[in-house]
Length: 227
Image 1 (tube, helix red, strand yellow):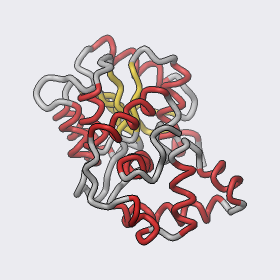
Image 2: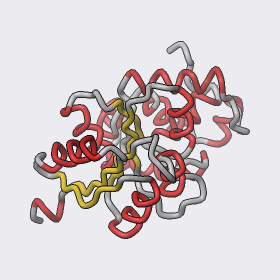
Image 3: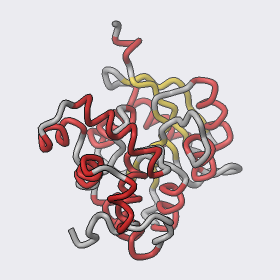
């Protein structure tokens, strides 16, 4: 398989031309990443994503017209049958924006002042279906979700009824930010087995991404907020 065929395909959405072009150029110069489209607003981002089916949309939050949260919900929110993963990139370290993006289905968050290597890692991680869990920003948001938005109807007491013991083990390790490979090593399983378990867990929890599964675990007290 050629490098182009196996490349991670990305759409970059940001209303500031210099920022958008800078992000696109940085990503495009990385081997194995191909920037297939750029958008200056959420509406265009949604149109491009549906037309091009990228592996990841790097989405700003505050944009004219349709904002990034609305666009994210249309691409990967509840009820979307064939979601396109979204990585939120923002200059605004504001909880409400991040809560909104998370609830809209985003697979991860990064501030725009993150190191280039961190951005590239995040894009690859989201494209691989892992989300971006192992950063301080996301962990802070998850903890805030617990204290401010316990809204899920399934309680921790029912977790053992909803999930098998093995599935619960995997969700707990997922909430620690572990990758499929790390979970497999921890539980002495094949990576393919971990993937199969996760594929069954998502519909049971009513979520579409690993990050949403972790949010569910925090909201329902399956994971100790102090841990």
